[in-house]
Length: 515
Ligand code: KIV
Ligand code: ZN
Image (cartoon, rainbow, N blue to C red; front, side, top):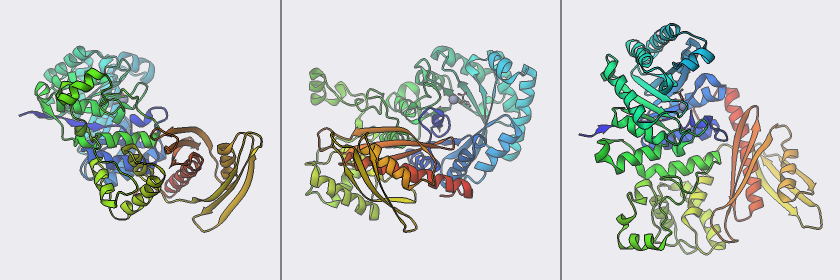
């Protein structure tokens, strides 16, 4: 019987640490729900002590996730462990993930601790965490650059003190697959009692070897792997979940191992993360890139038409991509839309379907046919909806290359007030409208950090997708707008980012996380 490998997803912790990938509480909750649908075994939902926002997200995720284990990271310190436990304690399956560096370079320069002190702290803090929670993971940080004999000693201390998972991190992405596999074998053969705990690996991609090292470790006996959607994470990122999972599925006989993932949810998870963070994957990214299943060369197309297995080692359907045989247009009905969405992995019904159908009709009226990309963009637009403090009521823009642009902007607030102003700008419609919005919400303080605009499909009638990031109080907030009119999309994106910020700050102020 093949071994069952546990998937520990750290998109919301290590992944979120990568530049540009920060998420607010509502976005993290949405992502956590999707990770459950994908079937991950453990969701590392944050580093509870690192900020009030992280604490609130971990606590919120712990209260909504039912099947997966919910973990919080903690340094090997009592206050970290207490805070992590406080955040996860109401989860159905809580876990505290404690780490302490064990490499010479980290002990000498970062921790300023001797080997003996490190071992004593592991013993004391793992035992303390165990007194609060049954499920304890311990990571000797920079494990791959640790003296292997000392690594065994550190792991032994953690196992003796009650750790139930031992994670060997390749913190700096330095490991070579064969060498890393040997290290896992050494830990497996020399640590007493290791057969009763999971051995996990956590690899970074600095040399592009994260997935290779992770798979080599599985071959060598690891039973848990740590990874992120789209491979996001510190510096060059972490092992990409989709790569490990599809390797195990495609080469299951070689690895003699399997996961419990519903792989048809992979594309949806990848797109959701890109949509939320505004960070797209490169087109040639394995499994989830735009070109991963596209055959361009004539000789390849010929082969695939004759028999798909000539150039395809896995089917697009297995990761949630479907080939569209039916064209949706303005004569298509609600059922056709629902069927197509369901083939794309989105189960939509009731009010949500009605709302999408209305938007679909507007789009189909203006575009000849509505593509899968258009549909996915429409669904994602309404994905992370927070209560709106500000609503765009109307705007009028007067622009041209011989006049300075003016924008007349009217916003409605959730308590029924109408705010309006007129603003001029020499930099065009987006600048004029953003200045007008700034004036109207002048009680809020933030700055625009990023603005991106993308066409969903080709053609001048394509929908424009606008992503913005604003920054306030050291946190970033995303906003998303979609529409045939790109200025309207830009305005909606900006207002949605402001609403995200206002809602997140309100949650933090009230200490509310069960949203
Ligand atoms: O890369 C690393 O070592 C980590 C640990 C905290 C597991 O992220
Ligand atoms: Zn890491």
